[in-house]
Structures are given as C-alpha cells and as structure tokens.
Length: 321
Image (cartoon, rainbow, N blue to C red; front, side, top):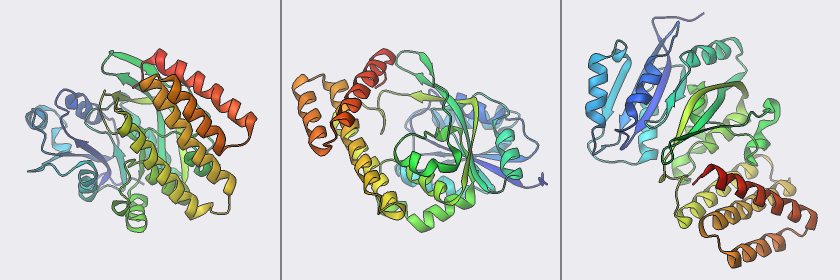
C-alpha cells in the first residue's frame, strides 16, 4: 500500500551547461501523473550559463515547482562526484534518473514503473525503450525493439547484448546504496558510470522491461561517450573493458570463453571507432589482423568482419558520432 505522505521516488538530475535543454528535462519530470509523492533533485555543477535562472523560474512559476530541490555547487566538482552528491540527497524508496539534456515524454512513466516494483518485490529495476535525438542534425532515431532475456541478463549485459537506457530506469535505492558500499566505484576510476551499476543489479535482482518509449536521449557532439576524438573513444572503450573484466572476475572467472569474448569486443569496437573516424584503409587492415591473431577461429573472424561492415553502414546512414 502506497503511503502518500512520504516521498516514494526521487528523480535525480545532474546538470552542467544544459541551459539550452534543461527546461524540457524538468518539465518532462514535473508532468508525471502519480498517486504518490515524488521529488526532483537537481544538482548543478556550477554551470557558467543560464541554468540557474531557468531552474529558479520554473520553481517559482510551475504548479509542481515545489517538488524541485535545487543545489548549485560553488565550484565544479565533476560528473561522478555530482552523481554521488545527488544520490545522498535522495529520500525516495526508488530512484529514477534524467540528466539535464535528456527528457521524458510519457506522463505515466513513473506510475507504471512503481506499480510494477511495488507488486513484484523480487525485481529491482524497471526500464523502457527510448529514442535518440541527434542535436547536430535535428533528427530522431527510434531504437529497434529488442526481446530482453530478463532471467539471464547478467551475461548479456557483460557482452553488450542487453542495453539499458539510464534515462528510462526506475530502481530500488537500496540496491544502489549496496552497490556503492560493496563495489566502491570511486576507487576504480571507471569512465562508464552506469554499466557497473546494472551489472551489480543483475547479480542481485531481476530486471523488468516495458516495451514502450518513455524518454528521449539527446546525443550531443561532445561528451564522455559521444566524441569525435579517437583517443577519448579508445579510453572509453578500454574503461568498459575494465568494467566487464571486473565482473567476469566476480562471477565467471572459470569461464575463459567469456573472457575471450570480452577481449574480442574491445578490439572489435576499437576497429569500428578507427574506421568510422579515420577511414584509414591501412589502419583498418592492421586492426583486422590484430583482431584475427587474437582470435584464431577464422569463421568467427569472418562473421565479425561482416558485423563491422554492416554496423559501419548503419553508423554512416544515421550519422552517429
């Protein structure tokens, strides 16, 4: 039974230089139709733009402006520290996430997710489908529908076959606190913040996927995961590899075929990055040979080459950076 006097969901929103987009992000949260109380916690990492003014205006003018708790840091502390800060402010039993440049489009998103979690206690997280918005080209791209294998998603997550849009999630805060206390992510310096969280959740709870589009992920030209700098992209892929290997050690350290697949993924993704950004035939061949040497299964190699070609065609067509 939901107690309306308590905050059931905390929506965590970190923001930096999102003045152009944050109104849309905030309004997507405040439009939620819920039979429970929720709060919107905004942590502004000392943005040198008009973010503060926009948030203050919404607090003062929006009918649900009183749900906003706004914090502005006096100096920039960085994305990971800001994420930790906003988690510590959350009072809800559940946490949902929407960063300042993304936005929700389903006014019943939180209600659907909380209803499921309240009635299915063995599940720790609910997520949905979403669509991408490419800011530079003003284009939307709908993701293809995927059949998620809920019961066995741990290994699928490690291999990148089970994708979770962080902006679509609603999950138990208790799980996140346990993750922070047990894994201590600040000691690892991982660039990928959400993947280790989902892997830990998959070890300790069930996942539920709602096949509906509830949110829009805004793709900007320069961010940790979206960048045209090949060195940054390589470092990001190497960080994902480190996360995958960490959880392989935790749960699958006797599964050497899985370890090999994780290593192959690193080279496969580096190959794609190099070809897409540089278009160098020579480097393309060198990386292919490197990939082949590390994987002596020739049929697997040919299959991976075909995947590279098909994915490159898709990347070019969609103008994904």
